[in-house]
Amino acid sequence: MTAPVTGPVSARVEAPELPPLDHPDVALWRPATLADAEAITRAQKTMDAVDHPDWTTPLEDVRDELESSHLDLACDSVLGLGSDGDVLAWGLVDLSPGRATRVQVYLTGGVVPAARGRGVGRRLLAFQEARARQVLATRSEALPARIQIDVDERSPAALALAQRLGMTVHRWFTSMERDLAHEIVAVPAPREAAVITYTPDRADDARLARNDSFRDHWGSQPTQPERWAQFVGGDLFRADLSRIAVDADGRVLGFALCNANPEDWEVQGFTSAYVGVLGVVREARGRGIAPALLEGVLRATAEAGLERVVLDVDTESPTGALGLYERSGFVATSRSMTVARDL
Image (tube, rainbow, N blue to C red):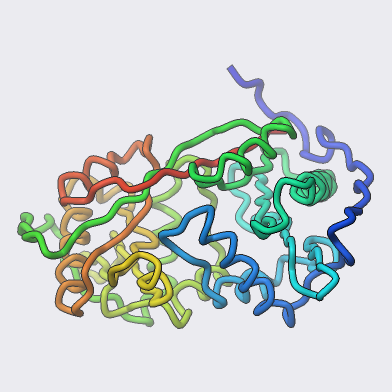
């Protein structure tokens, strides 16, 4: 059994010196700026093609990360540039602004395939891990603390790098697809709720419903307004495919919110929508809301002329989400994992 936390994170985590960033393949290490977004995206896409070839990182996502107000890019980002000025490696150290039950730092980024296998990744990740500890050493919350990385199962080298730093696999996630050429079976209407198309005026209502519904999901912390606005206000968000469930008073009880990235279609070989979040507030579970939301998304996506719906699910979710998706015709395609170290 894990011992209860009795003091602030700063009392448990010491701030180390940052390790030197030096490597013969890297001509210059420096912090990232917003002006680097396109160069970072180009580098990231070369990584995507090897690490998870069925989806690719859009420029919008990179810009959103670099623009996040809680990040200090001068301290929390790093670029490794080659002699030609191209990005060979990049990384962020992102302290989650939602800290209800845990203080979490996410490490993102990587090394382009052409520069792998020569130690660049080891230096990058060691720098990020040390910076994460520095960040945690400033926190006064009396909460558990975690440093974590998301790794695709198809990228064993990334897992090995994390394990060298003492991180272990904490959770598995499964990517799933639903071919819309197959019949969409009608489900019973939910009790005391109506499923309707999402509209922008319900953005914050949906955020609050998301935070309530994900309180018992592993590793989840409340989504803050800025990050939510980036999601539902982004160019790739598809309100027409998204659905919410409301009660007689118009209160949001559930949500299934989607985006669609045409760049993904090119690597997938089919057109698709991606369900970014689906959930039901805890007091409204058991009424058939989740299946009705999912059916609404499937039908809307098919009517829009897209071929599949894609999503990711926590394999051990206490809500039984994996079973819901399997019953709705989704099939597993790949897996990823959260690799973490608790402090």
